[in-house]
Length: 122
Image (tube, rainbow, N blue to C red):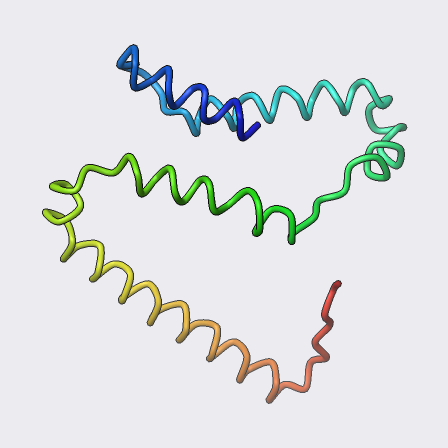
């Protein structure tokens, strides 16, 4: 999937595609592959076989998948557009961070005061 992403990104730059984005193409391919694997494993009856065959590894995802995507996004970003929108980027980042902190903080306080047991699903 990562190779497909980079290939569609290179093709988009070379041929100047006017519709879609490489991320859209990659997500669509992932959905198609998922549906094919789901039906190949027997649909709803073969769900256990499919879930035992493919396990999501968060450490692999965060260690090997995210860094190249972030590097590619930063490498292909136009510097002028970034600096033109730096105020908007910083304001959105700051406001969203404060909003999420507030919502999660209030939610956590409410859960602790209501003595609702918290479960860590690992």
